Length: 523
Image (spheres, rainbow, N blue to C red):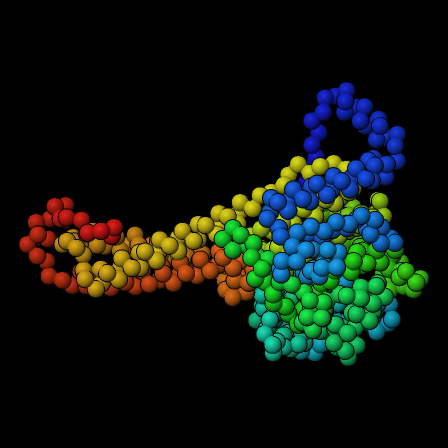
């Protein structure tokens, strides 16, 4: 996720100097009264909800002992008021939870970070036996296995009742070309964490959902966490919202039953806050037991490095073991964080080490084309929490509106052109038409009809159209309609042109094209 946080330093020199002196004289935690800061976050979040038309949102400022400030607004997908007990899905915020579960196995000696994946999953053949044999558990956690981003669409987001288990999805990775040798390149993909899910199941001989609940969720106090369809029904998870032609609609109610390891994990605001508190306590539970050792906690928050070539200095990836590390502008330069989304839901978790505080936020709206505008609420709120300054860069969802309305307009145009072309094939032009005119119009409409087909090609490169339809329902629907109408237009126009070319020239045609009347209608 991209972040657009910029400083606003526009004060006159004397005022700026005075402000700097005041800041230098006061301890960092006293830069603003907590009540004022929380009020500022509340106001900012409400403004962003209105700007993005988010139906429901819940957030909390969290300390080591739990929430110190929390608010919930709006409605869920059933029209009920959102509270701290309303369940949401968290998307990729599941990844630090999965990484925590993996580290418990490492601490117990049942798994090693440098174990080759094939030692636990012999069927893992991504990139061929030579490449797969070099991929380690650490590579999966750090997103440096060589799997490209598009691998997500091959193994994730399966909603059918008979979806295969994680280990049974590995074969879909065999046909994917690696981005490079393991450890040589960073590429974020949920496929890495789907494979990790299979590794955990192979090591523990238990379903991942059972192990993560026993090893992480229950010790952290996350008793109402959602890990599969059964727990989603038990917690009455409402559908999430996606934009349909500019209006939020509660249409996203599907879940990958084996997806808790990479994205289909969820729960209440209290559950998410409990996980943040566990992390602020360095992996220690409220009872004094340890889920993570201090060494594991530090390691998870350390950026990975890529394999150096030719003696060059190693390149840092900005990703640790399940956490994004830094990569943001001040005052979040040292933040440890993650964002996540499923169709209809989004969530964010920021750990701010300087203040030993965290911010968790979840909302029931998400679509790929609204990513920047929807996710900005978390980045902006975290910045206010960190230094009290209001964000100055809040992106609008202009990309979404441009994409959905332009694709819809194209679909409408091509549907009309299809009707016109069908009439030409059936009845011919209203008036005699020149061959040059017919060819020119045929070429023009074929070019227009090819536009949606050409647009679908790069989209299909990232996954099947059905998968994209789940994430961008309105724009992809319009584009598919436009593609069908465009293809039909091309076929009908070519048929009309061929029939016209085969027709004998009449006396009017012999007199020259420039005196021919234009083809009737819109053409």
